[in-house]
Each structure stands twice: as structure tokens, then as C-alpha cells.
Length: 111
Length: 116
Image (cartoon, rainbow over all chains, first blue to last red; front, side, top):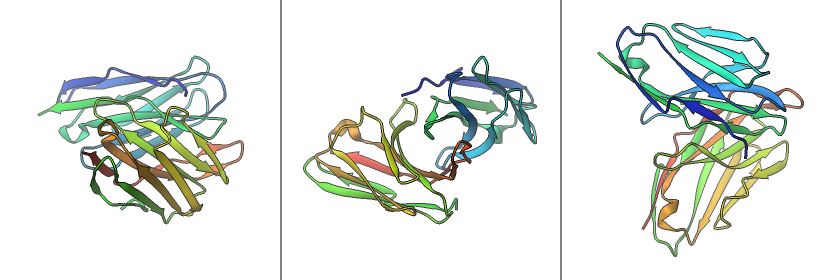
């Protein structure tokens, strides 16, 4: 089982703050790095699938970067809103076609 | 609605019972997964069926037995479970292209299992 780590485990920010969190993963046998958003009482939903070193993807106020050589990805949220409160999961897709998830970062945005 | 349907949504079972969880995907994907979410623990990959192969996490006890009769249906058969097996069990599907990895995974709503 592969080691995919996310930090911090949880994060409290004020509405309007910008924030970021980290996903680290093995740098060998890399196929893709996925980011998911998991709201309470719902299913995880994909935000980004990133495949190339140096990739940057953006969806509204959320963006992500990827460094496959050193094995990390950052997720950024600009101007956090209460509706951004969720657990953010990254998942490492290796050559064995497995999707291994990190422990998640639980974000709570206070109004 | 994500195109992945799990039943039942909630299940309470005794330690001597046998039950099955069902997952169905309507997305034409060729890979299906079972994940376990225990309290305060990461999503744990239990089993993957992809391209007609099965990959399993060797730490999953034999009291969990998966079955994938076709690319659209996935079952998790449960027998003689323990209270520590109480958790949220999530099914997911994705499309795998050889040497290109997975597309994004779509998840079902999960089955909340309680073993008493």
C-alpha cells in the first residue's frame, strides 16, 4: 500500500482568507494525482485530475499545482467562503491502476 | 446523482449474520473499487476490479469477500464481522486506459454499516 500524506489534517480559517494544503506521494510509477472535495453527508466529488509535472489547474477560486519529481501537490483556495467547508482528499494513481487516497484535510471556514 | 448507486444506505447486522453490499454504475466505466472509511482514519482501499483483474489490499480480512460479475456491478459479501468493522463503505468507479491511468472516480453515497 502506497504512502499518500496530506497536511494539515484540519484547518480553521476566517471567511475571506486564502489558504493552501499539501499532498505528498511517491515520485515513482506516477500516472496521475487527483483532488476530491468531500462535503458532509455527500459523496466525494472530483476537482482535478493532474498528469504532467508542472501542471496547474483552476476551477473558480480553487487551484492546484503538481510536482511529480519531488512528489507533491498543493491545493489553493482564494478568498475562502463558508460553503468551501469540506474535507479535501488527494489520490495517487500509479502504474498499477490503483487510486490510493491520503487522509484528507478538513477545512472549516468561519463566517 | 453521480451514476454510482449503492444499496443499502444503512445496515445493522449481528456478528453471526451474512449480508451483502451492492454497487451499480451506469457510467460505462471499466474499473470499480471498494473503500472503507472508519472514524478518524483515511479512506482505505479494499479491492479494485479493473480490466478484468482483481487487486486487493492484503490487510483486508477474509470475512470481506468481493464479487464483480460484470463491469457494472460490484458486491461486497460480509460474514462473521466484528464490531470494529463498523464503518462507511464507499463504492467508486472510473475509466482506465492502459498506460494512461484513471479518469476521475465517481463515488456512490456509501453504506453506513454497524456491527452489533
